[in-house]
Length: 234
Image (cartoon, rainbow, N blue to C red; front, side, top):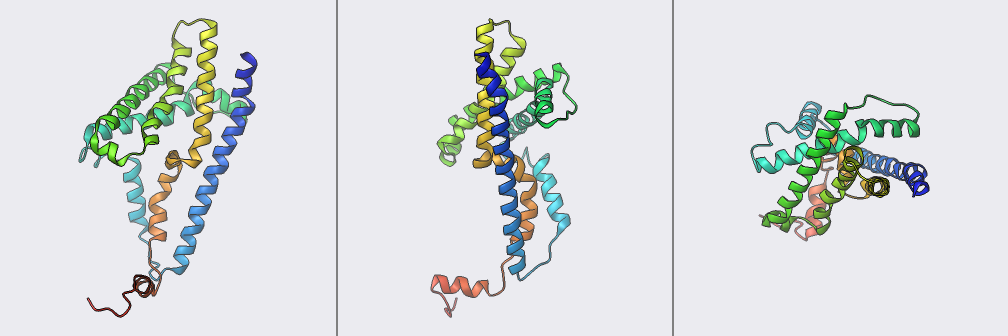
């Protein structure tokens, strides 16, 4: 079991982390390249950079919009994402793991705040899962895999909390830690190929929209030709 844990937390972690980095880099490069091509063909090349920056800030910190529609669900989602991002990056044990992989470290959260964020992430993640299942509108708009994401994402938090704070046997600790590491590695692999990629893409989304959403010249004629409405009167 110890050898398997060392493999999962060592070479396997480096492999899955590399897949995540290169996969996300590929997405960003393709998006930027597509935006450049769209901008080169655009008829209107004026870009309101101030509005793009403002919309990006509103997306990242949706303080004004969170209580307009589904306030409870929106607030739970925000708090869930806060823990989801901060704990993997700033938990002391994780910082040491990042240091062994990357060669440098950064600030780590105090244990009290790390435990609090871990618990809130678990509770809010399960609450989001229940909300998605119980809401008819959400069930209609969601795919089956959308219901599995909150469950998959809280598994490393549950197992990590058990290993760090509960009096469990050595065998149970190793099993929980193996599940913790393997589920974390699975999430890293899935990030570039699923909707989880929005954690990296979202800050760029408004800039991409501002650059790319420009119809090139004569696009109206091409659309009418495609629809078979060329020359038709309204």
